[in-house]
Amino acid sequence: MKKVIIIEDNMDICLSYSMLINKTSNYKVINTYQSGETAILNLSTDAPDIALVDINLQGNMNGIEVTKQIKITFPKIEIVIITIYENSNLVFESLSKGASGYLIKNSNKNEIIEALDLIIKGGSPMSPSIARMVVESFKKNIINNPFSEKENLVLDALVNGKSYKSIAVYLEISLDTVRYHIKNIYLKLQVKTKEEAISKAKTNNWI
Image 1 (tube, rainbow, N blue to C red):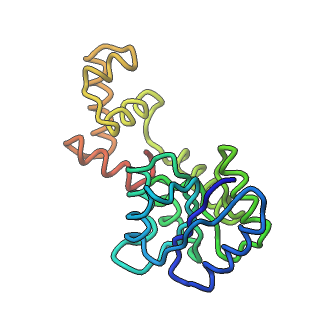
Image 2: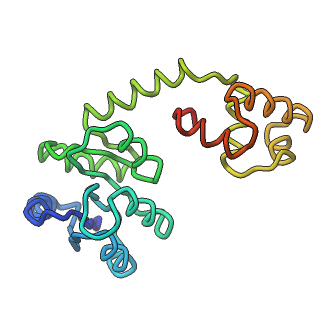
């Protein structure tokens, strides 16, 4: 039996989801919350396997911020965003903060239970419209990405905080080659610092 919490400010929706999930033999809703702050305070006690999280919530934290905080403290909790928003920026921000799935609230009952099943098996459940959005963005970014394969690896290593020396060891290339790739990355992005490079690459969804 997997334990589920619901973080949603609409109590009617909380009740609807709870009734749906509690009818299954594999999942049980152990708590519902209208604010992320309250949910986070009770995570140690609840010890959920899955959190269903809305984006708009009561309190000072939205669902994306809640997702980030949950994953920092309890990285093994699987998070599925359930929202009315079909917005690419929200989708990618949610996924980048640690959400494993993104569902639209008009999903039918079967899709919600199927999403829980999928996430437990290690999958990433998404509403069809969201999945298509992700694929189209992926295709676009591959086309627009100005970096070579090696430059992408170097840039990814920079994002993860590696030093030039550790990048050289990690990629099995010389320090001078690392400097060469970073120089090309800066030229292509028209920036002068690592921080500017990372920021601009993130803005364009290249990392």
